[in-house]
Image: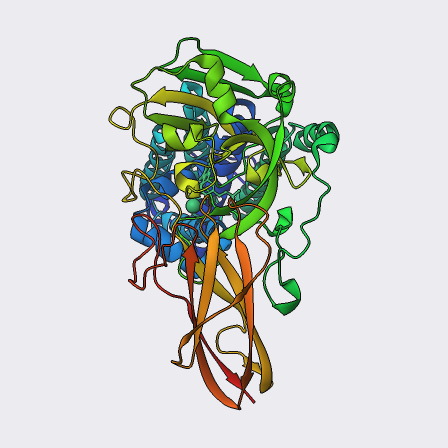
Length: 531
Ligand SMILES: Nc1nc2c(c(=O)[nH]1)N[C@H]1C(S)=C(S)[C@@H](COP(=O)(O)O)O[C@H]1N2
Ligand SMILES: [Mo]
């Protein structure tokens, strides 16, 4: 004997059955399995649809499954960071599951394999549940499942061999060899996952959205409305500016990754209860009469005093012009719009065709192409309706139908079918709980009653009488109106309450209502101190 080349059959030594992978190594095997799974799925998704990437698909499905109360909580607690919070939570969860899968599999790979199959199955189900993803999309989570299970089992076997070798008759020498084999395998998996993930990212985002946007922005230059709106805000007293910069415009949507569309690849199909179905390209839209209108958009999730309200100059074509082209049947009462990411909204046809409000298919925002996160290349903007029932971003399909026949995204989730924006007002300055110098204090803010217009804003300071505020100019009833009033205040704590009256004579209600089902109500009040 003594020949160093002796081979022994794996598992032949009785001690081998007893081998246990050290806990840390076992967790590493679990983590590498998850990394391989995510990377493989991400790479395959890049060729089919980036949203089929298992991590995103599970996140998007989770958003779809979120009950309204939790969604309202998330929006209230995290605002626009809610997506980041969700993704971080998912990453932490996966990390824990990967470690648990490893730790439970120190002897046999079966517990980890079962967990991997369960996770993979969840990803397949998530992709399947998404209406925007086609049949092929399931290939991405399937790739994840296969890569995850195979990586886990192979690394597990290698780790076990390294352990068995140490326990076996040849002791430390062969253990070193097996350990190096395991290490090589681990490093290979880590590097492979990194490369595959990166490649998936590069391929999945290869669509040149910015180039396409820049070209659209150039074409929109002649529609830019150069008239600034003098006297329409009291920004120097703490109100927002009359127009909100695109990068400051509030953003609310269910899309975990912003859909990446090019204007050249986009088309809009208008169909359903119409005489002539129509499919428009982006050029078709640009060849129509484009108008520019200032509109204040509001989210139904905006709590009293909340931030989800912004104003922009939108450029686009009137939806009533588009509908005139297709010839709407008399029975149709709902304009049902669908986004490329599967989101849907339904608006009453009276609102869309109302000559008093300019519901539009918008392609421009404040003189440039729509930013990707605001719907590039095209979205709907309907003055006077909350965004969820009207303002579909990345819109690719409009169906003329009835409310009885089709149900939009938020309705089964507890929101109303119809949701006109409520007359409301907000105090912007002073901020709640702030301290300002005693003496002259200007209270300033916004009020809105889109399509009606604001006629009066009143303030009540420290329980005194209601007093009228000064109103800024109101260039259009489709947008908000700014107000202010100055006071002479002694040092101390003060409470100011605001209420608005719209041009129909309606004064906003004092009744406190939640955002669900059709928009919050109640008077905004602010407590501040003067010193
Ligand atoms: N595709 C898509 N469009 C959407 C949504 C969405 O989740 N997906 N959310 C709607 C809601 S609830 C609002 S308030 C507005 C917000 O538009 P903004 O993000 O441009 O401010 O978009 C609407 N359009
Ligand atoms: Mo919204």
